[in-house]
Length: 260
Image (spheres, rainbow, N blue to C red):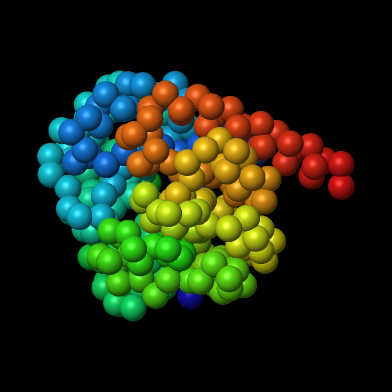
């Protein structure tokens, strides 16, 4: 009996078109439980390619916040980045349907997405299949603690690359290399490069990215999308510089491919 391949939805098609044209994406992570999240969205709405929404320690009033953000950003997609099954709302456009592949707890690898699947279908959310990988120093952050992550050492980039390749064979089209919100340091350029080279799926990098220069190097190394969250909460005015650096690197990456 033949299986049915998951159709790529409108949000993912939009992201892929931006990638093809601009070489890199900029996602801004909004925690709905942050008191000033609406003010942050107003300041960053002209610079992000998508707003991703989620938190590691439970969410309150998600429906109301999502509706309010949607009114502010218009047709820019809101992609849910759920910390658990309660992180879903019908007022978003899509959801990263993800497995925390290197968790020590099967709840985070398979059970949570399984329990959330029926709600995703009920809400008619576009599911974007993604591997979520916890990279050192994630154990010292909230998601590392809650997700019981068996963190991948920075000195072993090939482990992350193998997870990304495994994700590709599972049918996932995206992999998120995550050092954790507010991490002391980001995922290494070498890990980004090896993971992209081996798997050739879309690589998202987040955690500990505090300057445009660091974001630029991640994209040049192979990242397809950069996520900032804590940085934007602390300094929303840096978002334009961050976007400019990401897009500059993206265009340079396109030129490098064309010249090969």
